[in-house]
Length: 89
Image (cartoon, rainbow, N blue to C red; front, side, top):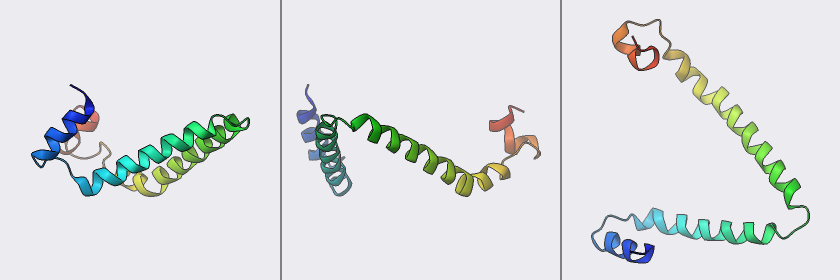
């Protein structure tokens, strides 16, 4: 069974959120096209490396600014019933 028939079956039964799925599919297609065009350039390796570094740095900043406070609230200094999933108590 190919992908096209599955999307028709699930779409017919109402299990596909078309308002989210269609923009995601179009974005994926546009990104794949842009990546295929970019890979033919001589400087592609440099740009891919720069993009990777940018994404890693932004992820670290996000984790430090947003998730660090949530993580610190879930340390294992609480009674066992609240931190079993973190410490294995």
